[in-house]
Length: 115
Image (cartoon, rainbow, N blue to C red; front, side, top):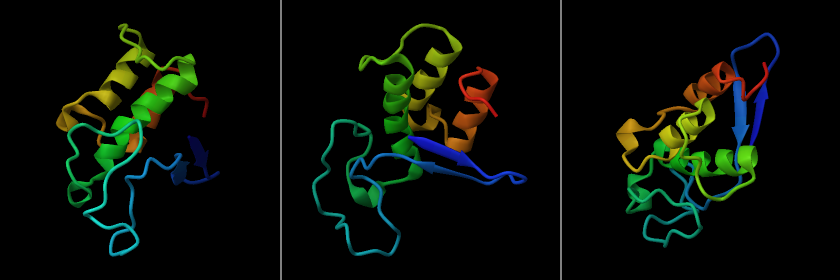
């Protein structure tokens, strides 16, 4: 995952490895009937038709965990980092971060990110 901030602006770009879930709205390149593949798929997502950005937040939790700890098993402690990862990867999508911006803000507060 790569987070790029633009100087003098609140704008940022986040690039995450392809999970096979995201699709451009209106694009016919990914069929809503195609099968979902990959090892980190939101268990609440039953179909591409139901896809929302919060479904990628689930996967981001696992990636952050691996990048920051080097371990595949999710952090389960009560540390700031553990709380962020758990909030990303909770199975109830309503309890997850709803935007990447929210994750970035909490990571800055937890001093996981500089800037």
